[in-house]
Amino acid sequence: MLQIWCELLHIGCFAHTLNLASQAGLKVPAVAQLLGRVRRIASFFHRSTVASRKLKEKQKILNLPAHKLVTDGVTRWNSTLEMLERFLEQQPAISAALLSPEVRRSDSNLCSLTEADITDGEDIVKALKPLKAATLVMSEEKSPTLSIIAPLHTQLLEKMISVSHDSSLIKDLKTAVYDNLKSRYVALKDKLKDKDKDIASALAPHFKALPFLSKETCDNTFSQLVLEAAGLENVDTAIRESDGDTSEETVPDISLGGVDEVDYAPPIKRSKDSALIFLLGPAYSTKTTAPQKTPTQKAKEEVNRYRDVEPVALSEDPLIWWRDHEREYPLLALQAKQYLSIPGTNVPSERVFSTAGDIVTAQRSCLTPQHVDQLLFLQKNLTVSKK
Image 1: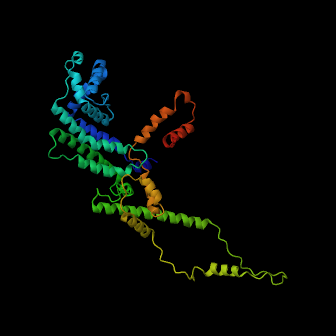
Image 2: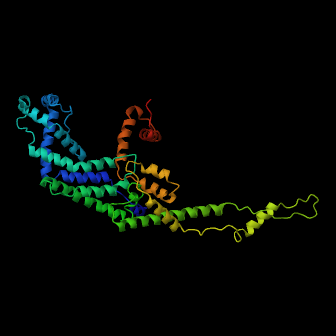
Image 3: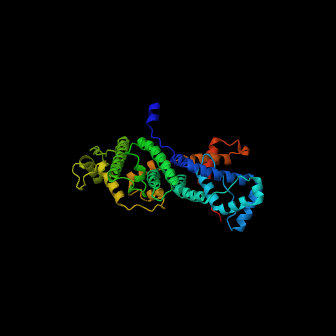
């Protein structure tokens, strides 16, 4: 049993991988120092009622959104990005509030950011925007996420390559994210053994062209797809043959009856024909049958037809696409169910616990586990139309 568990393929949470790579970028000394100053100012406005009231006054005067400042959390890197974005949005009001006498009496050592700091902050937000978008994509619950990992990983690595106009701070940040993201994904590549790692993306109608792979790797991926599809065809054929062997075979009654019987009924011509067909039909069939294709040939033709179709738009749901094309690609549809059902992140499963906490309250402590499962399912899947 232990050996079976060790052989099972395990794919780590890619959202967690994104979090670790982003945290590596935020820990660059110059970036961490800037974020520390932002965090101190945001915390001060949260603690001080005088400063908070003065900030609201300045927001109204400067026609800025009446948004509160945000403080980040330790476990969520995107909360740090949100803190910086909100700070930059409210920077004019923050500077004006910190210069007011009432606020300076509370903390005279607190100063706003310099112009250079603001420029660095804006560059940090711009550099981390792709990681934020990738995190949102991987947190999706109603569409497959495993097939997105390879395209996202390739695109993020390209975004994290420094360009000539990047400042030294941004170059250090991008390098830290790039190195961390690439090193962590190497482990995932090893687990997926190369030949399997891109099959999920190949089965997604959006990414089936596999532009992020070389032509050789792309062809190898589809060759593996053919082998797996042929295996499914062999299994299906074996099941049909097994069902045929266990069914009863009805042999037509070809007895002529007794000759001395007065009420002799002549044999029905159809019975004679049935007996003849039963005995000699397979050898003397008049129908011309096409040569039977092997499972590998069937799978290869199906994969080639699938590759010839243009990729669909990213806005289309791949599950709906496979539902509509299941009869056209029966073998690949089975593989799509197998691969696209694998989650690329554990975010949805973690959300179940918070949902369960909302459902199982003190007043509902007597609910059975079966009822809790049913309520969770309804909470996640039932859509009530509002009239």
